[in-house]
Length: 300
Ligand SMILES: Nc1ncnc2c1ncn2[C@@H]1O[C@H](COP(=O)(O)OP(=O)(O)OP(=O)(O)O)[C@@H](O)[C@H]1O
Ligand SMILES: [Mg+2]
Image (cartoon, rainbow, N blue to C red; front, side, top):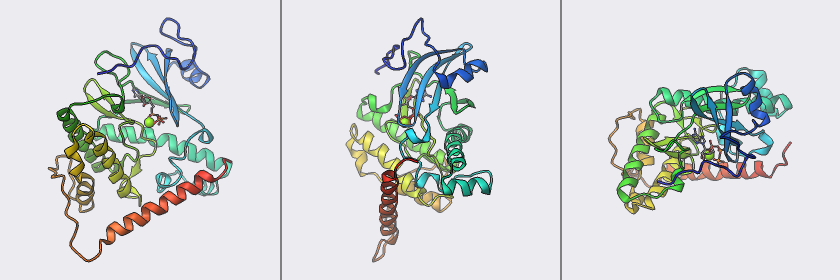
């Protein structure tokens, strides 16, 4: 298994396993939540991630970027039905005032923390959250067997048997999430780490409420299709499976349980027209169009 090298070209010089704390982490150092900042791990679309020391433990600090620097992942489907504390907040968010943007920002960041706690409680293998302070999420550093930051699935190759095994493990995780009322919404080989004890699901700010979001079905199907597409590179027979539709169908009928035995087959209901399928495609096209228009709007 490849390992991630200890040094980093990002984030400035690293001396004796520590670097000068970046501005956004200073508050946490002053509060005593972080002792030292070891190095910058990555700078992604939505956040910068650092390896930090807290007492005897090595942890991970995810620093969210300001909304204007981020992609528009949360713009359309994801923010639907996101719970806000009061109606003033909701109105401001709808009007996109400054207060509204701040409220949206807070909702986006705390969504990841909420999802981590909820999923950890449901037995899903996600990083253990430790703290959320000043827009920084402190959590368990997912590590490989050597104690280094774990690689993403995308950086690893598998035998067909390993691929089938991880695929099956991750489907159970998807089911556990759904049983806890959560759809990841951006699940792929880029948001799953291969830790020493198996796959760990990360990156949840866009997670949606399965029951209250009209796009939940589409997102669940996309998440499961992403898993299938990735693992089918190593085990091509997976391409013939239909786990996503089978899982959603059981969920909708109130029959989904974490120990559900799945077949990977899904029979479409007999009938002259597949109304669900057509509605699904329309819904999909409409959401894409709204997302496209939002992307075209100048940042405010
Ligand atoms: N708990 C963790 N343990 C180890 N590494 C982590 C952890 N959380 C994040 N990382 C690393 O940081 C990267 C970015 O994290 P994450 O996906 O949560 O943020 P992001 O801003 O959405 O990034 P991206 O745009 O790359 O998806 C991950 O691909 C992973 O390599
Ligand atoms: Mg990510």
